[in-house]
Length: 93
Image 1 (cartoon, rainbow, N blue to C red):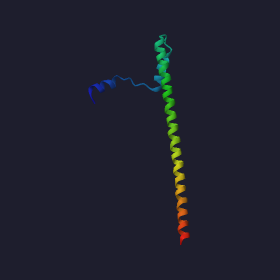
Image 2 (cartoon, helix red, strand yellow):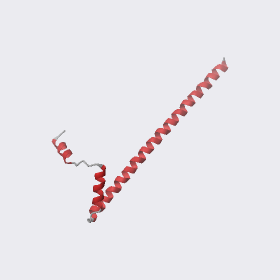
Image 3 (tube, rainbow, N blue to C red):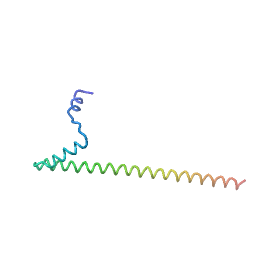
């Protein structure tokens, strides 16, 4: 790692999610309109990102469930086809 990367990492404060939220809430209540508005916008953006992440997880799970369902149906179809092929073979004999 270069010295530049090390210095950048050491200057980035590490805060918990609750502390981060608390800081945004404090900023959004400041008298300075621009700071408060920016903090509110950041909170809204974070809410949207959180909601999008949850929806992405839900969609991924639904997709996996659908694939599992289709896989089971394919297995059943393969068995049915094999039974039909066996019956046709038996009928030919």
